[in-house]
Image (cartoon, rainbow, N blue to C red):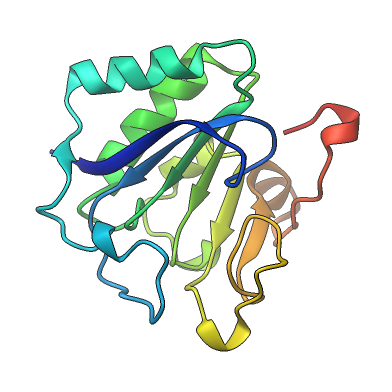
Length: 171
């Protein structure tokens, strides 16, 4: 069973608008200066059971919530990907007009289970690199990380970066 470290009921740092964020447990990357080292242990945190998953969806149902952000740990690690897909699928079925963002150390091109892309609006990919760290960057910690518009990327067959489309009411 997938495990999680914490759920933020109102998060304005991890994606546009007021969002719900879930931090999954378990990561093997161990990036130097990771901002969430407490999420590295796959046995840490708490199990994400059906009751907690339903509570997560209830939090997302509030009208002022613009979307769900899934961070880690590493949501796309082989130990976590099935649970991440379950969360993403449930979220998008319940809230098709709200955005789903996922942060991963894997590059988009190297994601093995691409079923996740059926649900993700924006994928923030790439390992945190303290040599490229920049606290002024929006929604990411280092300049090597990309904010990828998944639907446009799949349609174009090449990486299309997400732009802040809040003024147009997108994402």
